[in-house]
Length: 230
Ligand code: C5P
Image (cartoon, helix red, strand yellow):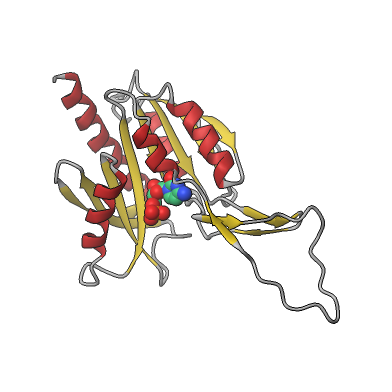
């Protein structure tokens, strides 16, 4: 049995990939399976936390036992649901793959191709950065965890990139995953680094997504404990 060391903590986890509609039948999406976010929610509930899982689009996954699940589709819906849940939460983990951009216009009818019409272009506008908004609205003592999916490897500057992102985003912990070439997305296993705003850096060995989840919750409990003793 797992330790019940998250008892009394209210946590919010976002998972999956958002979809940004072009028209009633088409969208821009991404390849997030949702497995890492679901594993984070499942492990947190097993360790006694009060869990809200804000789930965008995922593979067919079983709902984590004991978690309250809110289903959303677009980045803006995900932002609204996460912000609402975060206002009463001790910990927020943004594992969702949120679209940075959405189509500037969503047609209310299926976009048609006609014989002589020019090929369409899609204008995009920026979505709000939900993680940055959470950091700005942070409750005293609240722990905020971000994810960074980076292509490349350690030599390719992934970590330098990630350290800069951690600073820029202002979160407490950043989970760094190498993606691309069959890594992380859609896989059963995950690996990467866990970077702390306090300068701590931990390599997360290749293993089940529940293992990465456990490592994240260990680091979170450590931060919560330190803050309680301040
Ligand atoms: O900047 P980048 O998209 O790499 O940052 C990834 C982190 O930011 C993830 O935790 C993701 O959930 C979050 N994010 C967000 N809102 C966005 C884009 C990303 O909260 N619009």
